[in-house]
Image (tube, rainbow, N blue to C red; front, side, top):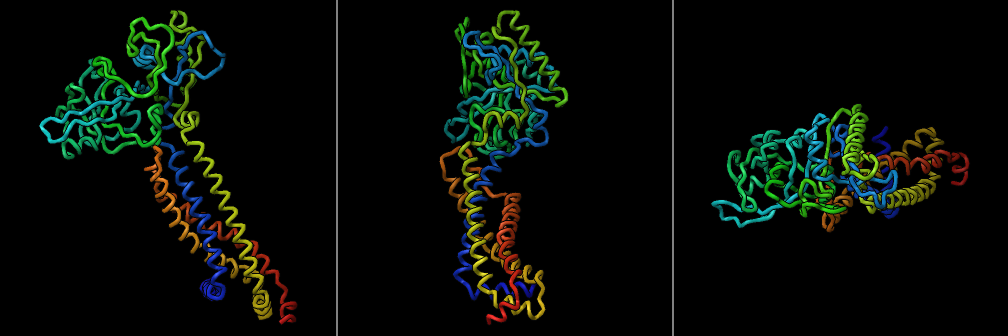
Length: 433
């Protein structure tokens, strides 16, 4: 029966080529525009570490001055070196990582390559198991390396390919900014999007090719990248010193979600102790957010992307309304044919199914073209000067969504016209004939 309805639909298309083309184009444009924006939104709003995003918490304290304090206001988004190192030593969570973005110049040894700049990360040993960093060769450094300020590094696959042609470079030395470091590990391709663990250096499209112990970077006085907020008098005159009143570090803690309240109380007690010691001037004001809460708070999905998504869905709705009108015109124009079929024994349900199959066929053709329009739209997005541009690709899950959306849209558009068509009264149509 379905094959018979499909043949009737094909015959109808040939009789009304212009009307069919208009419906196909309407659905194609609606699906194309909506899938373009849905794909971008999907990429930007996804969970970057789904297997443990509820176990990783971003820690905030409030070491700011008394002046300008407003009770309940949001504390600084980053941490001072003193507080970060103190929390790291006390290690009250299962794992904890202190970090900052950085940069350096690689000086290839015995190579035709010229010195080149890379983005780096200064962090602590727990960074690797906390964030599920995959290793291709070797291992991460240890907490003992942190304590000993060891000159060890873990490099990215891209940097390893560039310097060592993809071979096992563990144990070799690499020079950066005039200093020599021993490679203990090489990461596999790893670049979570968005880069949730440090939003100060950009949320998307940032590749960090070398990771170095935070303690070593402080010992060598390596600079950092990202934001720095200084307040009060600095007795050392160095923004990176232990006692500098400057927030510039990110601190993450891993724990069971059920222990988050206990850890929050620990942070409040720590803040009270620092206030009694004269370091903190404000009452305890802490925040503890998991990965998705932290991304939502920082608006990791740009507001213009959300607006474009709603506009595209609205445009899809307009296209469907137009398709409904065209299908109504097409089906009601064939009222005489439908009346004859009813008089020959076709039930209302059969008329309804026939019209729905025809609407679905229009939707399938329009959906296929719509996926092509979406691919062109995503190509255009990748040409834009935004940090998430290179991520705009139609993956398998979004392709399935496109197919599902196409079927839903075509059947939804065909429901009312098919229902109206099955209401045609045979006697009136036969009399008019």
